[in-house]
Image (cartoon, rainbow, N blue to C red; front, side, top):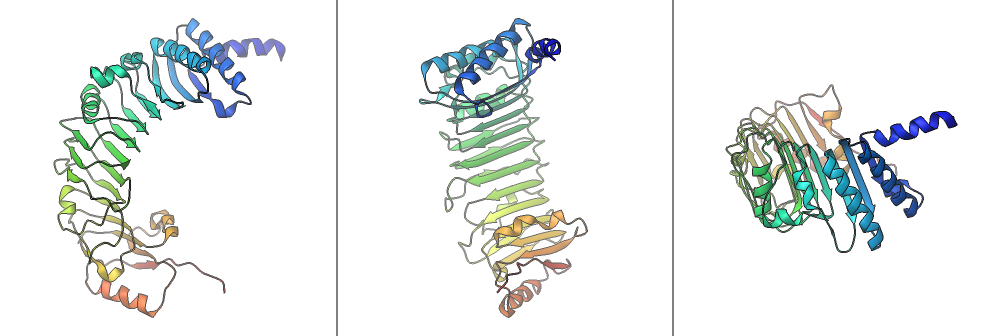
Length: 350
């Protein structure tokens, strides 16, 4: 084993997947020593890292120097997939060399500041970037423009709990396929992307005014998730998604009725506190309708393979004669009456 271990040690240093996660080490000293050692050996061989994961907390300037030095060396030789989560006071600012990593295909940034040159010059050279995920990152409208125009191959753009912007605008992006905005205070969303097929939006605070949406030009947009904002009571809500086939709607009862009208809609998952008699659907091509006002409804009818076309109800546990009367009134509207009905309720012991 001692003979083999020498060979393994050198092979480890050349392995193109570098995982620097401080939670997996017994001490901080051993973690930073490992980062320095493996980075030095890896860069000595002048290899391109396929994947670099760096999850660390910074407590003193010496640790920060190690991170800056090692990250700088790895970015110079090239990284294809980079995922970073930094906990430091003040927030860690990513080096400007990051913007010149032309081979980068996937970038995930958590709790960091974007490079200063991006904030001022707007120069982005991510010609190969396909996936971009930002979380707890300050970003403004101009930087969003720089990123989307400077990343022509970008397919997935997600921002979680990011701040500093009120408008999210993307124009004439030919490759963008998925966009997610979660925990943001965005007021205007305007997207022109002919290949966009998935869009999900979740409010930062429940009860906020819904943003203005303009996605009608996205003809391939068939899957939409809309969560946290007041209910879209107007019939014009789905006009923003004229080709939607799958809609996940998380909303609260803040109006008299919930009205949805769509000829393209085939799957509707509705998580709400609206009673059935306050829901009006005009969806003649609907195949699967899940209605839930109980948390355990996340189980989902779609996980039951033999129920491909049905109406699934997840009531809040208070099933009685009055509830069934509401169900009948809902079905009398003849909007989903063609679907077989499955009722999933908790069994509570007395």
